[in-house]
Picture 1 (spheres, rainbow, N blue to C red):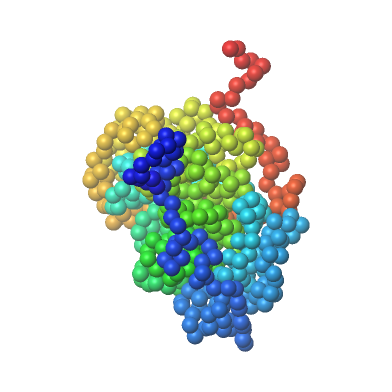
Picture 2: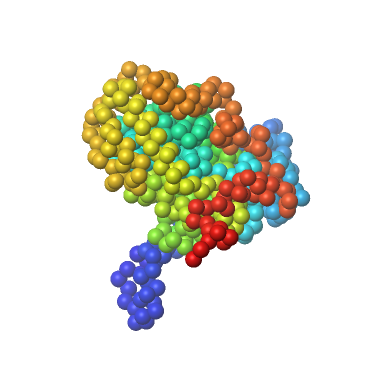
Length: 564
């Protein structure tokens, strides 16, 4: 706590010290340890020398002194055909091009292919907060913004996971990720979100965030459809600490793609600081390297925005500004951007809203890479910056500002119906496989409950044993399809089968891809952000049916029929 132990003479200062915002720690910069947002004294200045088609110097370091990250970026990111022009163009001029609606997005992307990490930082830090948000609005890859959610259960309850996933899809989420409290139950959690997510209609992309080998196995079996827990870092020592390199991460990315699994890497300001190997560089400079590694590896997108390191990144001056700047750099590299806003970092409601709402107004490919579709007590990702208890606040802000933040109003009756159907669907699958019974009492509790505390306690040991035995026998997505179809849930079975077919077609591996309720892939390739100033881009007035739904929140009163 910032004022812990401090004695105040002034009662006003006593009251202020007790405010929620002062329960967070605020740090002075410590550049030698990397505790600085950007422009650290040890950050290099932009420079690039190319001889005979080979980068021989980058940001003041000669090739003989390159570490593996420098070499990877120099050899696989930098486009030598544009590099000389890009590096020679004044950084302030490029910054102005970013916010100039008359300069096409593609022109910025073309120049960025020739940037070094220091050049990226020099460009984006010419912009203030408003201009960064303007830049993100223009530079994001997909025209329509979206949101991703966390769907977890503190008790690893599969019935709750199915019901919550169904409601999440109904509310407009494009992706849902789960994780576990107890690692061996991971396949069952994946099955819960898979079944529930396809109940309202087809299209929810799901993942189970666990150890990478198991995560890949779940995907290959058709139990999940995307992954984002393949982490990259900005210093060689952090990579080495995990027995990884940019090349090994690239190989793993190819493994996912070859099996029809959508993948994005994960990074975020502050990770190198937390792991003790920031090498005296600022957070934004190191994050620029992570973003460039992602692009150089051929991966379609990146989850960043500090993510689980938000506590350290947001503790320094201009930390949140710098986080938004890294989101902009991601868009400038023409990558799908899942822009964070996921892990809770402050007990202050005002502060967590201030971190998130600018990205809602700008719109990113995924404004949240983890809006808690459950209450925070169930969030096994260390809590979410927004959660199920914030649904109405978020919906009202969308309505207030005529902004599509990705969430859709639903009625109580609609939510109850899909939750009940999802719970009954997973009940039928358990019965078909001979797994531990899901009782009608559990179905009822999942239908009407708020959190895992409202559901009867299950025998988690028995659930683990059942799903582990099934995994040894080769359990896969088609088994789930057959069990649902056999037990009266033909529509849900058909939706899951459609998701499996997408794995073969692989259209949803395109940059920033989501699947619509009409079973169409929407990506940058067919829904490219075409913003070029007022009257262009994604605007709700161009989509009256979307605006009509956003403004029709359940608590709205019709003044023509209202009787006080």
